[in-house]
Length: 236
Image (cartoon, helix red, strand yellow):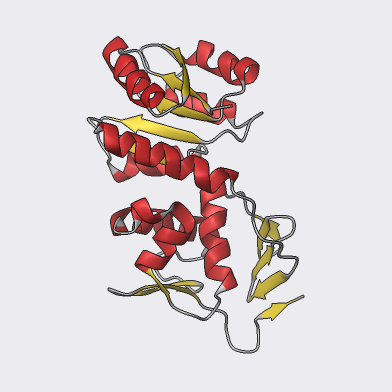
């Protein structure tokens, strides 16, 4: 059975365009024009992915819809935005979005993003049972749990996937392209600004001083590394 996608947008033209494109490549499409019906449809229809416009005509807006969906569902959410300002992207990540797509977008870009998000959210992770301790940062891979200074840190699915990839390669430099390809998919290989936005937001959650990071270190023009002080890195 093909995946079911819920499109939440108040513009009929956008809904028709998205539906035509996605149905042409084999997806089922259902639609809602505002927030409350969208939340109900996620609960009742259990779609495999949600395309969610930020600027909905009535309350709740897209951010609030995503936040409320996250109270009961892990369905992947791609936010649709008319302008990809960093504040919009960060807010979307904060409420649990998995990706964003800037209007206007091409049919090719839409399909590529949908396929990439479905692929990375549905693929099983290889078995990893160790707990990595890196200074005051602790990552329990089996439980997908992250603590800093003993306090649990709430990460979105994609934030955790990025941190996990850095942690599995602790004290080794991860190239921009390798991180983007592994965490998001080959379609994102050259989207370095996208990676930078996620790194900034991850630092805000993990670092005592995000502007002077201790753990997630930048190697300008090359990539990032999870730096574990020598003698402090341990895995069980």
